[in-house]
Length: 394
Image (cartoon, rainbow, N blue to C red; front, side, top):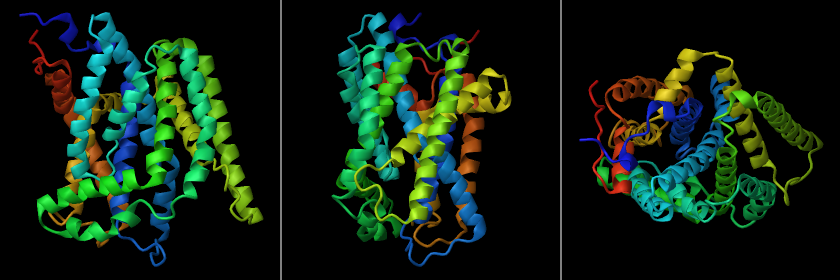
């Protein structure tokens, strides 16, 4: 029996490949940087000595991925939000009711994911998504202006927040490390929830600064969708080139500023206006535009196809990465955190191997099913309807 139009899966031709490709690239950065976090758990930075190989790997991963992946996913969340709201409105569904329900179930999934990994970001999308909902009817111009206002305010916000709290992140989790080292799965899961609370709610740097950055990306993604930028990507080649050059120039200029301030040995040069996230966002836009230009040029087709496949199952793959982390790094499994039993490079290697396996799994799964398993569950909960998971036979 045919499914109602409102509940049929999005057809292949309706998806924009470059969006899934960008999600796939961002997910690579997420798993690499998250697994590096496991290396740093309990590390005394005053005593640690990393060798040349570790320093090079750390430098490259930080330059390419640090904070660029979650900001790129935040941009894509804003873009996807606009697509979703347009689709449900066209199908006669109340977009406010639907999206509120969707964010509620995303928050439930986030609680589960937080028990796997204290660095969960799904809850932030669920909560901040409700803020974005207030602006869903905004024009592209309004959304872009809001993103610019937020963008120029970020350095001031970060500088101010930095004066409020000295300790944060893993420093707040130290008293709870024994829970993670234990062989008790319930204690390990409780550590994840406690860690999420301490590092992302008690930590002002995350609670305030990160969410301002996230909203900036949301509105920029919203503006991009409302202008149809990605649906007419080939037509926007000249604008894409400008974005590429401007973002590269901005990132290099900020790096130059950091180097200059360091050479001049100026004490606390960014006390009132810290441009760190301006560098992060400009470099994120640079990498995103570079990927788009390579895609339009027809380069790296096999790589982009792999990124597209894993990008279509971003939620499933993200949660699986965190789930596997328990068995690799906690006392329940191999206890590779809090003891640093292996070289820094192995953390990156483990992340890369898991990612590659997920690429092949995603290809196989999507050849048989309409959605990733978690995406399917989330969609059913959002619509309140049973949806076909297995693809219909020809």
